[in-house]
Amino acid sequence: MTEEKDIKKKIYEENGENHSELLKKKSSEKLEKLVMSEGIIHEVKERPSKEEGKELEQEGFSSLAEKQAFEDFFVKNNGIYIEHEEIPNKRLHITKDTLTGKCSELECERLMKYAIGNKFYGKFLEHATLTMIDSLKFSVKQYGPSNGYQAWSHSLIHLFAFHKDGLAMSIFDTGRWDLIEKLIDTAVEGAINADHIGCTADLLYMLLRFNLSRIDSKNLNRPLPFKPNTLKKPKFIKVLAKSYKPEYKFAFCMSETQKELFISILEIELKNGEFDILHQSMSDEKIVELINAIAPEIGKEKAERYLSAICGTKNSNSSTSMEKKISKAQEEIKGVYVDVEGTLIYDDKTLNHDLVRQLEEYRKNGKIIKAFTGADPSTMEKILKQFKELEGIITFPVLSKNDFKGKLLEVIIDDTPPEAQELRAATYIKISKKIKN
Image (tube, rainbow, N blue to C red; front, top):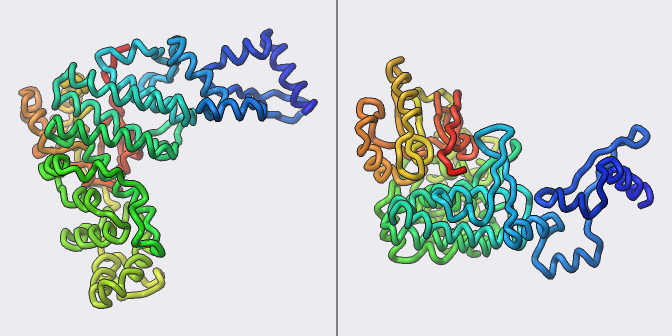
């Protein structure tokens, strides 16, 4: 303890500031300094005392850094500085007032990512979540019920898969299922009011794979790991029926137990001859384990048929003899694949003219240009066909990103990195979002 105090004292002397001033200066980030002492690197972090820890817990904070950031943003409205995702070495200053602006859902998305990235899983994340939920009203007021929901749901799905400092992150990491459920409940109500699924379609695929990956062969009759009840609302199911390939989403929304979901997806995969969802969600060994677990119920003959079709093998308790009948395509799929929402079309539904000129150059060089989306393809196609500038450039129909999970595409142009969407690109071109600074 004495050595640590000496190191801290040295840091404060070098900075010419006392402890409280330094903490205030570092309010939006954890205090972390590295100093050299007799050739040894010591790491010094802000650590609350036992009494402070109890007080923080009672107040709903996970750390002193979260409490300070919360006070700066939500109480004093001094705001926080967030690294700009598109422009290196630039930071955005976000305050509570910023969130009532034209692109409020984008600023709320940044606020949520800031909380998740800094592991502010307590009171800060709670207030950020409520702010994100409220931003749907601003989006609808700004763009109308349909376009407003599309923009908001586009920002929402980014919270479930994004990268920070090269690390994959997700709101799932927070363990705040209460807050995640509130966001999903809002997405469901938004879809019902807009009468279209928006980017919530992609969110349902994420939830489907999340639940499939956590199925336990010894507890198949237990409820799904995480599925909000609101997903079974009749009005939402009606909207869902209009979306692209609804059978997978139906299976997830209507399943109650782990066994029910697994068998439903097995049947769909077998019928379609496409086994991507299961292979994206679990290992081959796990698939065999689960099929063997349900064999007594569905019958040996049906279990054999499942194993033969999906794994290319007869029933076996070992995965060593498995040979996949359907292998993941490793060859490069030719073409230029451009994302729609937030990339080709900004969230305020204006066209990205700079990108259109770039696509025209690709077309002149003989490249086929295809639009693909994590939202509903038919909805996105209607939006794109309103722009005469895209005639002769985009090859319709608009495709679903879910059909390309795990596959290698020649060129992807998107505002979100491919790996955050389980896509692969030989060449990735990042497009900056149009935001209000």
